[in-house]
Image 1 (cartoon, rainbow, N blue to C red):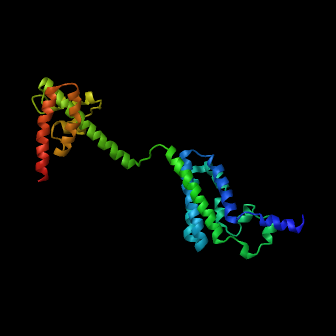
Image 2: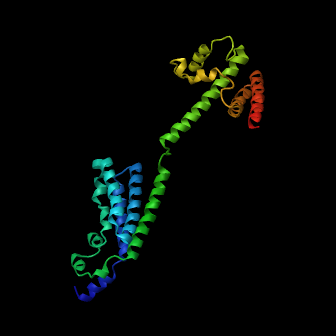
Image 3: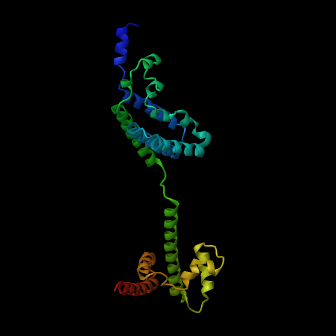
Length: 274
């Protein structure tokens, strides 16, 4: 090939940062096909950090604090994924930290061209900026749509706390409803002549909760104090919650009992604020 054609071919090469961005995008797109949604999310978050580290590593060349962070995360993922990590590991994203060889590794240069390079033809800051900025935008977009496709994610602590609060609230409202049904329909008081333990076992059966003993029963602890188990403020909320169910059934005697206790609870609530 004539030398003029070699020169023209060299001049037609894309900018180094753009070229590396295209290669990295293709590698990431291909490797993610091996993983499910949650795995993709974890690996993309890892890649996001990698390209942030590449930009910082270029500026500081601080291998101990920057490259080591990448290496430690990579090792943790390897331990977690085992053989499933092979497709990702085989892409050797660590090569992007090798600024002196990455263009040759990714075939930007032929071997002959690479051997003829002068030192000032290595990657410059603009190349790294183009690469890392392009990857940041691409990965942010991919992650955005993966988040939109995933099921809601809550920590165990948040979930347990929320479920416990919902459970307590629902149980209290159910017990209050049962209390007013028995009181209005059969004149059975929570702390009347009937045994609280017997009432507790009935409540367990009606609410579908297994009964073991009184000491382990949250229903028993509440039933002994009905309707004033909780704070006046919470009782007001619970009474207002259950009242519409009886209003719809036109059970006025129960509504009257609720309204009476609600008036007392609202008064106690006001006094508690003083």
